[in-house]
Amino acid sequence: MKLGILISALLSSSFVAANPIFRRAKSETSASVSVSATSSASLNYTQTATIHDPASTTDGVWSVTQGRFGAVFKPKVMIINMFTKEETLWIKNLDLMFNISVPMLSPEYPYVHSNGNFSVMSVTTGEGEINAATTISALAMSPLFDFTETYFLISGIAGGSPDMVTIGSVTYAKYAVQVGLAYEVDSREIPSDWKYGFVNFNTDENNEYPLTIYGSEIFELNESLMRRAMHVASNVTLNNGTAGNVAIREKYNSTAPAFDSPKLVACDTATSDVYWTGNLMAQAMGDFVSTISNGTAKYCSTQQEDNATLEAMLRAAKHGILDFNRIVVTRSISDFDSPPPSLNATSFFFDTYQGGSSAAVQNLYIAGLPFVKDILHNWETLYRENQFMPKNYIGDYFETLGGVRNFGLSTE
Ligand SMILES: *[C@@H]1O[C@H](CO)[C@@H](O)[C@H](O)[C@H]1NC(C)=O
Ligand SMILES: *[C@@H]1O[C@H](CO)[C@@H](O)[C@H](O)[C@H]1NC(C)=O
Ligand SMILES: *[C@@H]1O[C@H](CO)[C@@H](O)[C@H](O)[C@H]1NC(C)=O
Ligand SMILES: *[C@@H]1O[C@H](CO)[C@@H](O)[C@H](O)[C@H]1NC(C)=O
Ligand SMILES: *[C@@H]1O[C@H](CO)[C@@H](O)[C@H](O)[C@H]1NC(C)=O
Ligand SMILES: *[C@@H]1O[C@H](CO)[C@@H](O)[C@H](O)[C@H]1NC(C)=O
Ligand SMILES: *[C@@H]1O[C@H](CO)[C@@H](O)[C@H](O)[C@H]1NC(C)=O
Ligand SMILES: *[C@@H]1O[C@H](CO)[C@@H](O)[C@H](O)[C@H]1NC(C)=O
Ligand SMILES: *[C@@H]1O[C@H](CO)[C@@H](O)[C@H](O)[C@H]1NC(C)=O
Ligand SMILES: *[C@H]1O[C@H](CO)[C@@H](O)[C@H](O)[C@H]1NC(C)=O
Image 1 (cartoon, protein in one colour):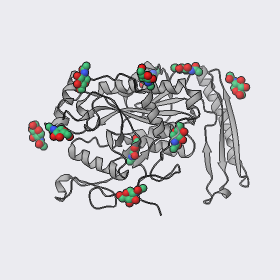
Image 2 (cartoon, protein in one colour):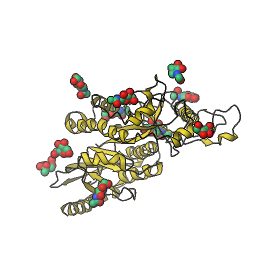
Image 3 (spheres, protein in one colour):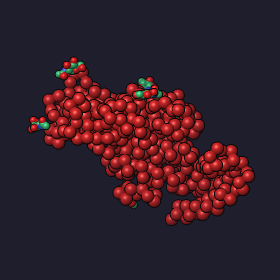
Image 4 (cartoon, protein in one colour):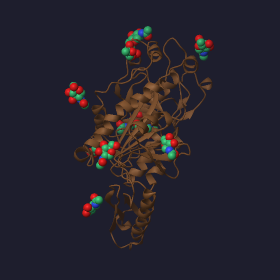
């Protein structure tokens, strides 16, 4: 009740304060407005926004860089899950007991969950690229939140490549690649010299660099921050999985990481709404990831959301709504994306129970918790001002956030 009153009070004050910005005379070069909000719940900070004069830009477009006028919440950490199994441990163990209703989140997952002092929150997107992009866009645009200093931990389970990971492994991505953006011919109708039915946009053979780009094909993330997240988790004891998981691992070559116990692994992730399985699909998708990144990225996890989530975050980052430097993608492995030598793709996928999601969700939490604690404990010294600034390029194919990408075709 108290909170409800507080929110409506702050929202109306932010509306009033925000209005003058849009009435600034054209001749002024820039304007900024500060709104400070104070409440009994220790929310006390100031936001500024700047509207840039069209005369100082070449295209005459009014562009607005904004934080959040009168936002009610300014979380330090936002955990992003995709479905119930992934959110449960976070919500229960971190006591994220306040449900905050946010318009346009998934009907299945309508709330942001918060701890008592609003420093740690989680949101669940729903599965698949459309749910992820819509939920994160809605969240980024919600007037309730100021995400300008928030760290985002994408925390989900995924398929895994037997040559890099095993059931229960926790992976940390530098690159996220959307592999579904391609032409596809059913492989029963392909020429005899093709390896699979996928052909990149505006090309006519397997695995050439796509000549048409949609923009969400590849994202590069802050490697310094990813290394920190891995470092603080380096002493955790991961759940080894069930006897059934061990038996599945033993079907793989004894020299393959699939055979081994789970570890933390730095390796890239591939996004596709299509949940593929089998060696040929793994080869086709692996080729795309390699080609689009000019040989830099190699996927080890397969999932259905991350590039969609990152696309929404990138657009928000472009306008100062959140900081693209403060994103870590962790994916733990619940199943293999290609079969062991003794089984074919369909008999492995449909007839063999892999059963790794329990170990995978536990390990997401086990490995993610030290990073969340690190952010809270070292907020003033390391995180408020990000001390893990990237040394690598970050952003998308279009260089939306500036900098020069190390993949893609050269720009004229
Ligand atoms: C809020 O910030 C103002 C300005 O810095 C300060 O004077 C005030 O004491 C703060 N209030 C609380 C509750 O921290
Ligand atoms: C709050 O969200 C949690 C997690 O999704 C859910 O289990 C719980 O039922 C919700 N509480 C209310 C009052 O809706
Ligand atoms: C907020 O809660 C978290 C744990 O839920 C705790 O670590 C942190 O110290 C609290 N912060 C403040 C300012 O009370
Ligand atoms: C891991 O454990 C070792 C040995 O106890 C310790 O020296 C090291 O600081 C720990 N690392 C982290 C990140 O906690
Ligand atoms: C942990 O998993 C590895 C790999 O499957 C297996 O070799 C090992 O025996 C397991 N350890 C225990 C204690 O179950
Ligand atoms: C296992 O992998 C090694 C090294 O990659 C390879 O030489 C060997 O032939 C493989 N064994 C089987 C049974 O596939
Ligand atoms: C896959 O293996 C199963 C079990 O051995 C067999 O019944 C099935 O025909 C095989 N499918 C293909 C496409 O080879
Ligand atoms: C990566 O994040 C760190 C810490 O936030 C930041 O200092 C660094 O500038 C970021 N890197 C890039 C390329 O933005
Ligand atoms: C990436 O590879 C393509 C061809 O596959 C090449 O045309 C392009 O110059 C390369 N980009 C960079 C940044 O090396
Ligand atoms: C998808 O996102 C991942 C990071 O999770 C990034 O490495 C990859 O390049 C992205 N791919 C596409 C196609 O957007």
